[in-house]
Length: 101
Image 1 (cartoon, helix red, strand yellow):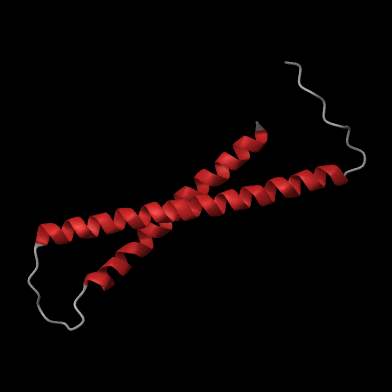
Image 2 (cartoon, one colour; image 1 turned 60 degrees about the vertical axis):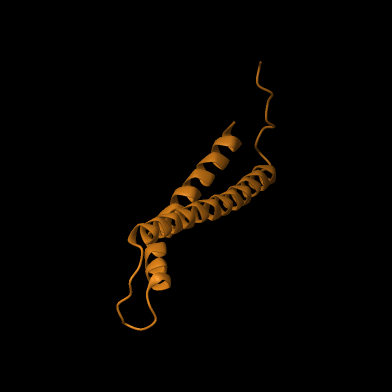
């Protein structure tokens, strides 16, 4: 159960961190991508632009969350493997006992 909690904490923390970073980075990219190359005025369909920008921001947040969850999963695996190898290396520790069910 402890290993599951560790994995879950790392995955959720990675998801939150990835979403946060995407929320900070995506608006500047979306602004750059949707701006005109020359500083001229353009006419546009504003509701369509708002829908497009909102969809893009949500897409980037979802991607950031997914990437963060993947990184969190990898970090959880590394932490679990290191903890297990350290537990095996300690010679004076008693063997784990089975929990009474």
